[in-house]
Image 1 (cartoon, one colour):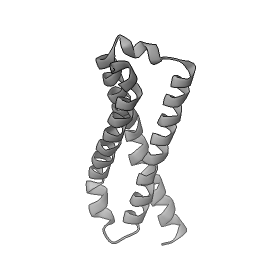
Image 2 (cartoon, helix red, strand yellow):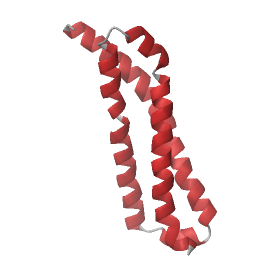
Image 3 (tube, rainbow, N blue to C red):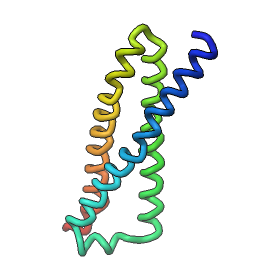
Length: 117
């Protein structure tokens, strides 16, 4: 694969994945917000600077995990299945976002578990 093809694949990957990053983050934020609302009003007792820093750290980790899609995308685009991959890579977004939402569900359950007891 020459430099121009790598550049084109990288540009294509960025165009696709960065367009969906906002939705990914909104879905994960909604999972946390739902758990917060379910545990309300007791959940407001966990609000603190440390809680906010923890949420920020988890958001950064979730976005680093999101970047794993780039590795898969660039690998698939360099294969003979490039056109097929570009047509169906939304499935990776859907599966990955679902997986991240499940992890977020369990982390949120843990964050608000002490207020539910």
